[in-house]
Length: 114
Image 1 (cartoon, helix red, strand yellow):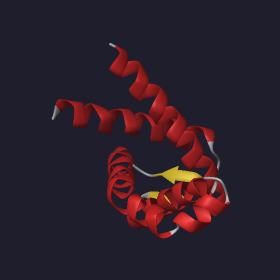
Image 2: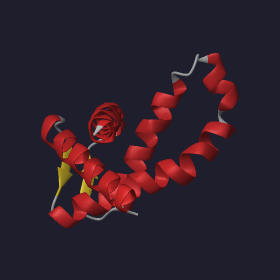
Image 3: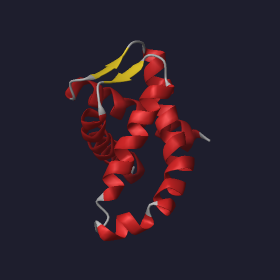
């Protein structure tokens, strides 16, 4: 349980860094940041595998690059579901999803090493 909460906090930090680096992303309050990170995690856990399975032929044809588009869609969908979390467009969501994945991976790797 503590590992799950720690991962959620780390993903919240990753979302904060992405918000500061990518223009076009706005998060109104700290609570919206926490809820946004939670919604992104839930979408990636439950909806993303279904979408990847349904788009498997396209993913194979693009040698896996379509997965990046799916990540951007998940990020954009999270922004539409959370009230105080706004993304200006899909291109912004695409770049933000790439950076969010990178920051999240790095933070989780650092913590798991200890």
